Length: 449
Ligand SMILES: [Zn+2]
Image (cartoon, rainbow, N blue to C red; front, side):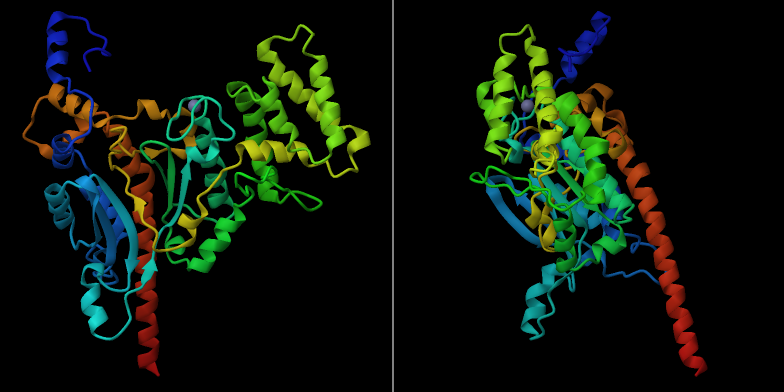
């Protein structure tokens, strides 16, 4: 927009001012977004998982059994919306102009016709497929961040979300063998993860719970002081890897300083409370008191106190007192991903769709590249008004297909397409074709009998 743009000449300045659109979120803005920018084609292709092709192995009913849910202005919910084609999806979204679009599961039958099936007496309306999803809110980290609280974020605390992406993405790929994983900025306070491999989509609720439990280390709750308990003679390989590859350096090099974790008595006490042995905790506290008078600057106090804590806990005399894990436990308590488990465990949970606009921030729920997640800055994500300004600046063109190419949404749509959608559809096609030829072979064999 004009006030942030680098402007050379008078003419450009004039154009910039004309193009600028006041900040905000409203139905008028949203209508233009849905008319010109929302990537219907890619969105539909994604949720079709190859079944929209001409191949005889395609399940033509597949996309029509997927629930979408719209939240309209004034919190009117339209659940169980379903669509047979991209054109149908597009015209419905344009007409209803939803403030929020949620994606539900694929059901056994078209969710829009569920009542008809119920009347037929057969209780066949059940969810049969759904991406494995994870939902992480930074507001769940309020006890370990001092810069912001609630829905607010800044670049001092946002890296907690970057850590979530690194840990989960590596494990979902490395430990579970999933390949088609989409990370999305939730638009305000966190991130969403969609695991889209067909194996993931077909998981039962029990299997989803087992995977969620695999990631569970943090046992939150206001009243429990100790939120992480790492038991057993050695750390589980996944936790050990998470610690050495990500958490330790993040805690020591970033969080300790950005959140000034040991800079005040109150914050120090919070960490000491995680040490189960009172004598050891007070020994560390005494050492910290000692360095108050020394010449350590404010910046160094966190690092030097952390070093003192580690030296004390890891010294020979405490090795046998069950404190061996305490350093790790503190690091995990402050940095390990805090997942909303319920979202992951049940197939029929709704989750906000990518490329929605968050009404409070006006920001687009754009995909995040897990390989470059450190570079993601939520405050740099395009807003609705910014995009409309860019459309204005580019001028109206006849070819409405490519309007997004002239806005800063281009990078996000291209990333979605090339890094996520295309490789996933290729895998879907291969699976579909091999399943079909296996079926053909089977019926051939039956005939030969
Ligand atoms: Zn912050």
